[in-house]
Image (cartoon, rainbow, N blue to C red):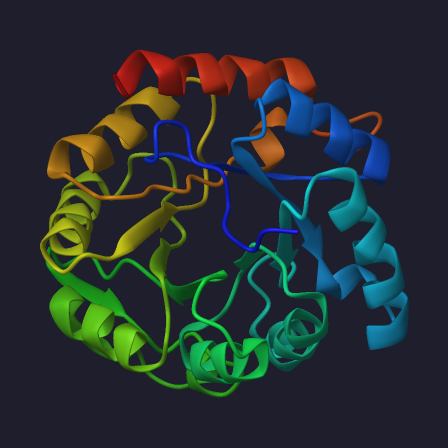
Length: 246
């Protein structure tokens, strides 16, 4: 099974949550394979239970597994690293300080590992204090270029920019996208993305020249009754991707 995600025209791969193996399969088909499916480590009481279950998702989707923290919970960082080392998924979600551990345990350069940084209300700067302890301390505000270089030092693949709050941080996001393009880094916008703002957010990243974009679309496309991500919404998102990426 490949540890490299499938990108539409080598540019965009969707990231959505899977509520079950069946839901994962349906979303994978709706995205024509250009998706990684988030399964949250926080939902499991032990590594063994998580590994056993996540292997089923891998088998059903050609390894399009994204090992998640669970609402960006920094306390899940170590568990995510341990699981990833065993599972060898296509995608790993990490807080800034957890990236090096994940890459070391993976033992290969191809799985995508993002590093979580947050907006600061200051264009060109991000907060990197997103780890279990550092998130409880005062913000560590650094230039986006420095954050990217630090993540590259640790073996990271992409900036996870969270919380986006949709387009609330539009100018900051543009600066992050431009820096990712300049320093050959991938970009993962996350938080408050829905069918109404997805196109504009993706367009900003593509226009900036970001090589690969992995937008996370979570709660806005989840059926509140079943907890499933709606495959028809995933198809709609893919249609938007096809419109933007020529």
